[in-house]
Length: 193
Image (tube, rainbow, N blue to C red; front, side):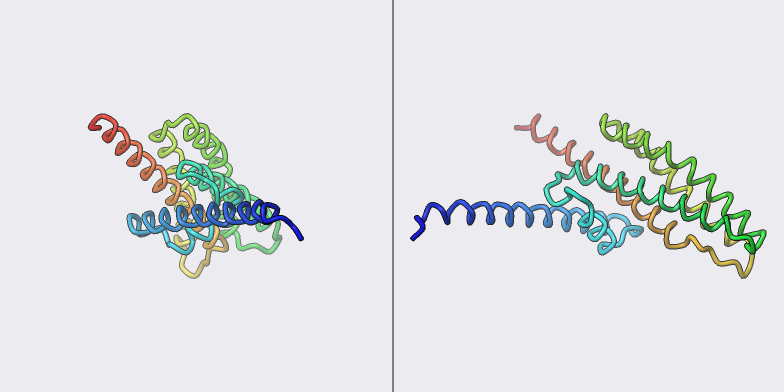
């Protein structure tokens, strides 16, 4: 018969992982609830599914979730740019659509250094700078999508990708606001206490 202590270690390890994971789930859910309540551009389900799918999100802090959201933007931008390049190879593409896609390629190409800079700014806690850089990425997605609307009957093949970029960017901006507000509250508590 095994001693009781040999069962305790695996059980305690399981319980700590379970509660740690549920703590991460709660942070993601509470964060997304707050973000979607404060910003109509953020859908709760999109926020939770995006963050939960990211590696290490279950044990991340609020600041860690902020970095994860910026990484998700970067992956999305890179993927969208690749998708645009593939679409541009189509030989029978409508000239107007081809022109819009070329504009989008340029916008998303310019967005890559912006999001990399946003990551550096965020890591240095220069939230104002990161905000400007992420806002420029949001503008790129909107400008890309709007280009297709200038001609009647044209449907953007990038609508979903542009929406994802926009919403991920809105999430990152909202998370930075939560972090700044959280830091301000902690500083106020430290000076009052």
